Amino acid sequence: MDQSIVIVGDWGGSRLRLWLRQGKSVIHRRDGPGVTALTDSPQKTFLDLVGDWREAQPAYAILCGMVGSRMGWIEAPYAPCPATAAEVAARTVALEAEGLPVRIVPGLSCVNSLGGPDVMRGEETQVFGALSLDAGLRSGRHLLVLPGTHNKWVVVEDGRIVTFLTAPIGETFALLKAHSTLAAGGGSLAEGSALGFAQGLARIAEQGAQRLTHLMFETRARQLLQAMSPADAMGLLSGLLIGADVAAARDWFGPMQAVTVIGDGALATLYVQALAAAGVTASVVDGDAAVLAGLSMITRHQEASS
Amino acid sequence: MDQSIVIVGDWGGSRLRLWLRQGKSVIHRRDGPGVTALTDSPQKTFLDLVGDWREAQPAYAILCGMVGSRMGWIEAPYAPCPATAAEVAARTVALEAEGLPVRIVPGLSCVNSLGGPDVMRGEETQVFGALSLDAGLRSGRHLLVLPGTHNKWVVVEDGRIVTFLTAPIGETFALLKAHSTLAAGGGSLAEGSALGFAQGLARIAEQGAQRLTHLMFETRARQLLQAMSPADAMGLLSGLLIGADVAAARDWFGPMQAVTVIGDGALATLYVQALAAAGVTASVVDGDAAVLAGLSMITRHQEASS
Image (cartoon, rainbow over all chains, first blue to last red; front, side, top):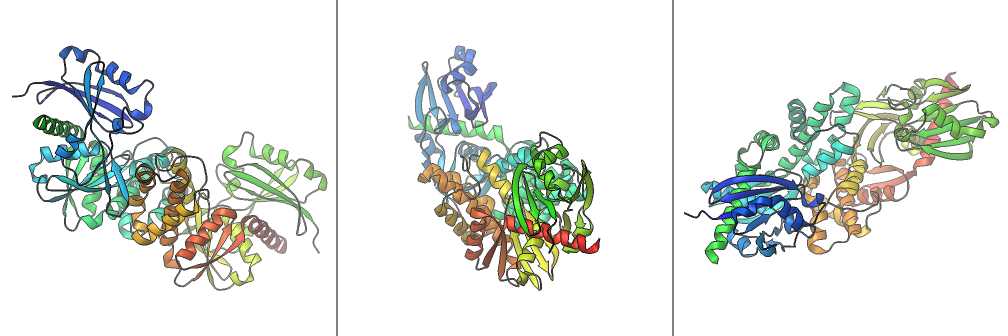
């Protein structure tokens, strides 16, 4: 049984998560800044965080996410869809950081279901991880959703990512929350009230996603005229945005009655709730578990081919 | 002929415009800060800007807009729809600033066409002004649109504002422009390229407004994959948002084949273009002319009833 020590990581725009792994076991975890918030070079930031893990003599490090973008450490060109884990593994970009080999996982590009270009970085690894964790996803056609700043809807077929579509739901919500007159106050997409969220889903169900822009101002008008609380207004706004996102994804739901949500905690729960309201069964795969399983799958493919 | 001297003004969230008027003629104009950007009290800000106009011995001042909100000078409670100019005139709130009588025009509230609560402050005056300037709007049922931070769609019937609906198009665009990863760089809703704007309208026409959140990320993906310029991406984003706003207003277009756009310059032109693409004829009333005509109409009603 393979007991080699490696460093695996997900280095996205807003955070870096590193794990020291021996065989299948995680020994340590450390968190650092995302590539949009670096104060040092990527190499120095990485090596400082690795620190004394070097004493365990890791064979190499492998990183997925925005670290492979133009604003990251080194550009790893997008792999085109359809793509398997083996194809992604064959396209990792190698570099060396003070003697430690580092492999950067490329993102994916595709033509999405609306005929537009689309890209992802990091989510491909989580999707491959979900396939690794759930054998039922490895054959046939399945829909997965990865809620977040740039929400991804992903179609897999027989172990391949065939297409995906990005909706900037988390980013839009965060900007409206932080700066708009609609629903002021702190809090994330998942921090509004449950009551407000349910009302937002109901408004989209009644009026249709095409009315999103015509429903958004209700968050402000209800506070002014009906003494709606800020927490309820925030919930209403997140219900409208997530409800509209789910409604727009409806074309996929006919052939694929179940959706796998990859994510953590409250936001994943909101998507499960919104999908249930749209008549779709959802199951959840933990985001961290998916990253770890995905990086393992990619390294297995690399080792098998080397 | 009435040659009395009055000060009229539109004091919104982002700017104050004051005019010194004698009879029907504007003698002077001065600009000041909006009610969300005050460094002094509203009264001091107002009197400082009025300055030497006091020497002309104005009979009173009348102000519309956010000046009558909770964050303004004094709260002028919303008048309910349907509302005529005479009813709005009867509900102005009076105060006095160092001997100068000041009248604050109330905003309007309604239940909008989606069954939600809605509010406006300032736009009611522009709508009454448009009715004053265009006799054809004074009888029958008409649709008007006032593009801006909080875009208003307004239905008038026989001289009454019967209902309206707010879409925070300008605010959403401004936040995405200033802070998002979608279409970075300076510029307003009207400063994207014409090519990008036309592409945005076309994408909404092909895919439907319900796909707005699923189309927005194209602004970023096209820059990454197709070397789309930032100006084109900005135009694309504004075409998507305005196209979705116009498409969602489509229910009104059947019975009302023509729409009156109240506004200025480039943004009004974009709405005319988006309406034309949706098969609707639009005419434009200048925003400043509408404010002046609306304040005149309201003061005439006050003088007639006093």
